[in-house]
Image (cartoon, rainbow, N blue to C red; front, side, top):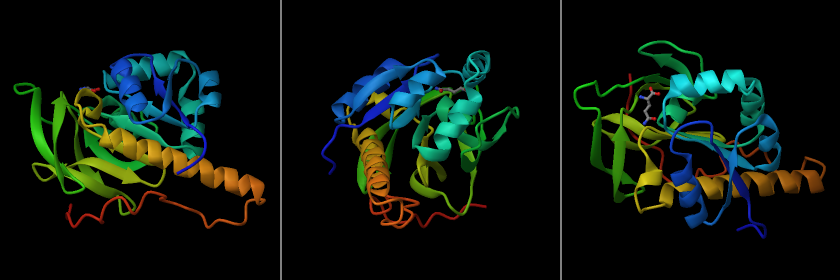
Length: 225
Ligand code: GLN
């Protein structure tokens, strides 16, 4: 554990950012709402919440935040939930749309169809059964070789981590179990202490921790096409 409290931003242009803020605080982080690219300067990690990815894209473009977000993601952890997962994906289908491309995954928007748009399901995370709320959720159709599947539902990945980043197609901020937020908080903590160590030691003392939280869960045995 680090000796400082890290600060995590929640992108607050649209969507359910307030619930993420509370979940982060319960998980032990300082949380602030991020509305401009300069707000990004003061945070160690970022959550992009659920909402409507097309609306978020429009607002991000209007606020000139796409490039700053991509630059932030090149250095610091981002966790995207639902619409946020769509924004982090490399490829978006149904229909295609622009994205940050920080995670090598393909997502299909509104993957569960229009008829049954929302559901609460039981999923297993780290061997523990937990509730997952899906709201007009995307389905992850492909994960790249560097991605690690942490949870599945109906044979599709629903919680995936790759290097600094992670995505959930469900809404962990809407249930009482904050272990997913704790996991992201620890990931951000580890990353910022590694960077603090690098700065102190001139950048050479630590190996490049591509995935500092790799010990959290065993590598999934799920096979995807
Ligand atoms: N269906 C939304 C989209 O495509 C995502 C829904 C959500 O974030 N709960 O952006």
